[in-house]
Image (tube, rainbow, N blue to C red; front, side, top):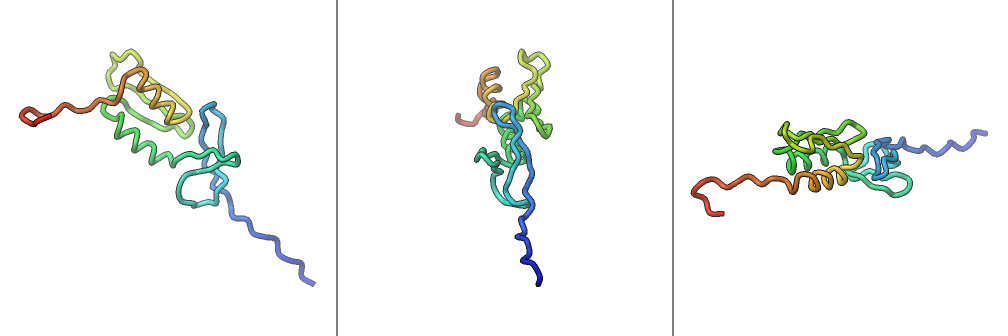
Length: 116
């Protein structure tokens, strides 16, 4: 008699991220899933490329933004800046750090002759 086949469990996504306490989280969703990543405790995080694009849009004029695969890094373009570099485990912490040390993202000034 042929034994019952074992159930096939799809491989997990395996994408990792750090939480606010710098603990590593591993996504347990199926490989190739859409949407946010989730670990076994329910901690959720966005795809790094989407976050990087958002940070570039908000802070790209004043800082170089990078994701190292583990940490989020922002380096001021102005070498005279008081707080030149920022390294944080989550993008939310990086943005809070940038706001605390540099203010809100700069808004370009309007062109001459255009109403404000």
